[in-house]
Image (cartoon, rainbow, N blue to C red):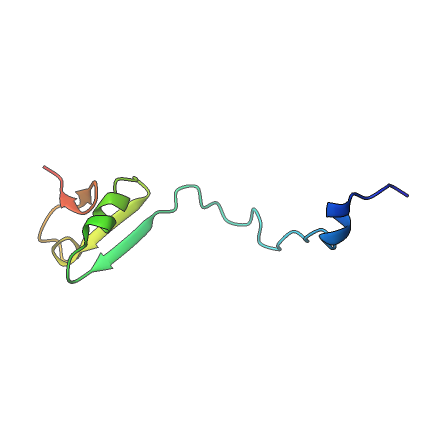
Length: 75
């Protein structure tokens, strides 16, 4: 029998792999935030990440082109 460290003894059994691991490819998943009242500065700052998209009412209803960089219209 292998000698166990104090950490191994206190940590309990090893976690079991989740049944859905590797079931879905979420590589291109994006966080999309919708608002009818606009977005605050923190939301715009978070939208600097290309994985975050802010969608306001004008964008949702096609009144402006899709936005990039935090919900601001693309020139």
